[in-house]
Length: 254
Image 1: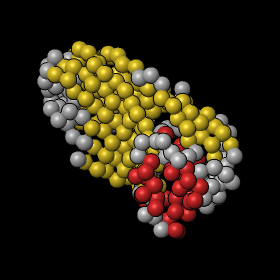
Image 2: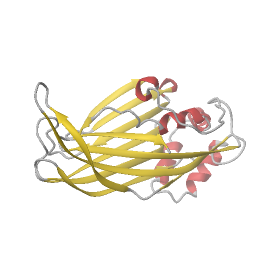
Image 3: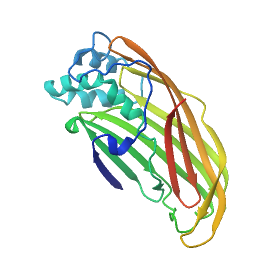
């Protein structure tokens, strides 16, 4: 597994942007007035009553933080800029080989906040050298935001496609999932769509040929409730894989 660390958001996100409408940026030290992010005790109560899968593990992680760390955690939870950066994390990512697990970590706020983008794929891939062998191959894309080492949100999209040894002939399955322990962001998943796409492949110094790609997409709809304001969030997450074992993903406004 490869793990890359990037300090600062600019290198990871480029010019990508998320539009909330008129949203004000809150300081990490600015407290919330109500809701799960109003205090450490309110966040604990939120997790104790959450039916989200994995909430109990997140509660244990939060309890393991010191009192000072828990206060900083709550401050970051009220910073809309962090969720802006997280929700644009997938946009513009370079192609990644599906024959290895690859994690890109972006450290923010002195390392208190980390944004993780992970891509995994079939161990049979021989990326960029020859087409994948006959059979099904699966590629998964995951994006997480962690505050003080505690995961508060994770989005996943995956697809399985069939290679006949020359090109992709079918997208067998596509879907996605989420984990959300933020208490300030509400997201719902639309129906995953799958289809074949087209792409040209050009060998260095040689001829070009065309082939199919596997395309999966999901529309996420929701809202952010921070500092008394509610802001609409609609994002389309797309994953495109080719027969040579490389994949790209994007997360854009809709």
